[in-house]
Amino acid sequence: MSLKQNLHNLKLKYQGTKMEQTFNALHTFLYMPNNTTHSGAHVRDAADLKRVMNTVIMAMVPALIFGMFNAGYQYNGQINGFENLAFLSWDNLVVGLEKILPLLIVSYGVGLGIEFIFATVKKHEVEEGYLVTGMLVPLIVPVDLPLWMLAVAVAFGVIIGKELFGGTGMNVLNPALTIRAFLFFNWAAFMSGDKIWVHGVVDGIKKANGVDAISGETILGTLAANKHVGYSAYEMFMGFIPGSVGETSTFLILVGAAWLLFTGIGSARIMISAVIGALVMGLIFNGVVDSGVITESSKFYSLMHFPFWQHLLIGGIAFGIVFMATDPVTASQTNIGKIIYGFLIGLFSILIRVFNPAYPEGVMMAILLMNVFAPTIDHYVVQANVKRRMKRLKLKTA
Image (cartoon, rainbow, N blue to C red; front, side, top):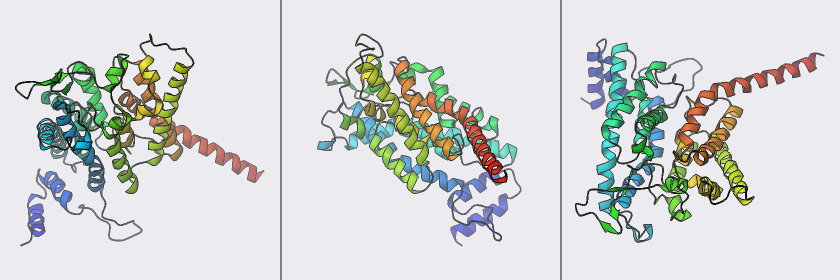
């Protein structure tokens, strides 16, 4: 008897029991959805929500793998760079696996566990939305975040940020960013303060036990402190810099963006307009510095003086634009609305980054802010279209 036939028999066995929805979730993860159309004017293909979510996960895998190598690279304090293949060493990967794999396990274990509990209690299908959220969360947190903090934040994000609103497709705010915001406002020092792990070398000497690591500033922290950044544009673009797990390599984020656009899942309007908004805000700040209004004594000088286009290479702005601003549930739905929505995310990301030195990263706040205003943007776009059509109708009937 084939595996598929065995699973079908198990499906019949669990039908009508409390475990029916749990088994269906596991079954449709491998095979076709339970409900399919057989007649009428319907578009038929093999895609369902699980497969769409899996496509997004595939787009994040390169950044995840790179993040594992980079965690070890930063820990070992290597300075040889990629040209000597030191970055891709086994030692780096082992350190990355030890740090990042537990984050993935806790994220999926807690998040999916809660999803299955709600589905069992409420007797509805298990919702697939957390498949992407479960991958996003470990990629947007520091590698040394205590696991119990992550577990508490994930529980909050799933229960309060999503289930309270009705589940997948009904949430107002991006669940992954809701979790990150919960972490930041409750344990800010572990998210952006002096407790973040950067590497394991002190004054060029590796610690004796080979495990302990020191804290330090990321590039944004350095700029916020009005210090010079000691990384080249190439290093920042490729990702050989400290930062959250998946946000450092702009190159691999662009690879993921290309995959999302090729599969038709990501919104090019949101991505492009967000990049333009960030560049415009960066240009404005560069112009203010060049005009002499802001001097080197100002606490905003380094972030304002930083080349406008390099703002896209540091922090989480590229990752946020590609993987979270484009969330189809919380983003604007109209074409014009997507352009406005994306542009304002890019604009506010750099604005918050510059004027909030205590938290020199603005993409999280910008996306959450625009999540709230997305329905309003769509409302006025639709109303503008209605008024234009009514005006044309009056001209034709006059």
